[in-house]
Image (cartoon, rainbow, N blue to C red; front, side, top):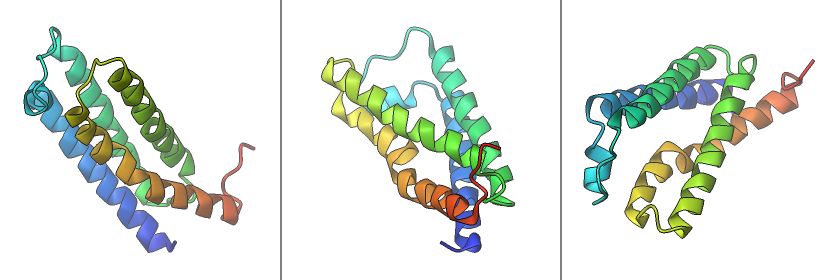
Length: 132
């Protein structure tokens, strides 16, 4: 993967996360309404999720300036994008979420697995991915 492509993926991820985070802050019940779910009793907790997603967006935009040097930001994002679907699957199996809520997981997590993994692979190959 070229540096230009890595930068573009991180820029798109940053803009997406900022937009999604802002939409959740401004319209905290929208995802639940679209999925046919009961609205949460405390929508401010969901708004906090939106804030966290937005902060990730800022991180991705920062990492886009030099993806190989800023691989830890991509790694943290990648881990969240792996653990989120695991949690969703657990609660789906418990009957706590309808399958339609999985659209959130697809767009917020699953579609980013390959680009983020490829960026981390490039960081590894370049010798940047190091815990030293």
